Length: 170
Image (cartoon, rainbow, N blue to C red):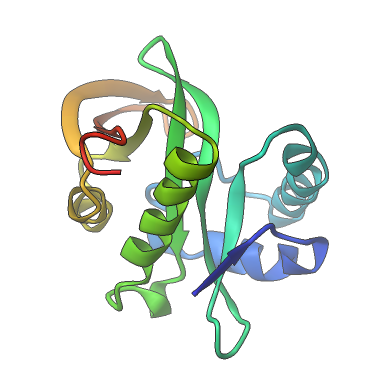
């Protein structure tokens, strides 16, 4: 894999990945309007990388150059606590090949070795068993379950919070 900052030209492919039902089922901040979603991606690309040394990066197949997903870290408030949150997603057709684990391990190595972070967390929907397994396989440890309000679908979701520190496995 190759992991790098997303560029504007990646927006159509990223929107296509985000429109897959299996992605939309667990990534709850994706809007229904794909044009609006494309504008959000463009704004993120223009702003996030300039202000931080991190963000969500594109995950590319090294041989073909194809964008197959995204992985990275961003600041977020989880259960009332400011955290650095890990996020990752892959297109359906690229799952089950070890790519998520490879991308997550690379991002965690960057977070701890290059940025000097002391903790990274992931908030994962309890029904997203594949993502929960990736977190475990990358050395993340379960901390707690929390209830999230999904305003878009007017429902509660149970999410597990996994964490990792340089000492615990990063």
